[in-house]
Length: 150
Image (cartoon, rainbow, N blue to C red):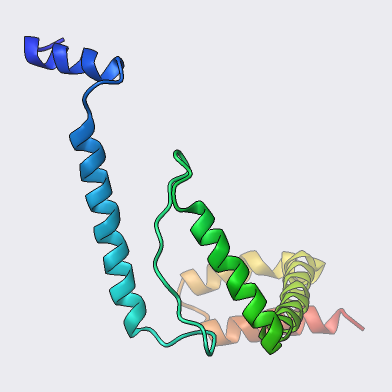
């Protein structure tokens, strides 16, 4: 398994001893990352007026920092609820969701339409062969889709 020193180090780590430097290094890296994010956030325009986004750290292993993040989440929700921003964003998200579902339905309808299914391989080959432009391909596919809709 390697040198005598590395075997000793391995046994110390397995026994829960040692590894302090690794923990310190991880803490240093964590704090440096937090500082980097804080600097970046300083230059970004806030998405929500009267709210300053902060950088946080937490650990899912130790639980350290999670309570602070949850507290910030609750504070954000309270402020945005009081100002009406929360409900306005929720309404906007619902509208986005509606139109996203419409787009998805139209795409499925379009690509499963019998005329499009039949025409699509020929159109694709014509494009690959350089005999048909993308714009004309779109026009032909949409024409096939729309003519059979009535």
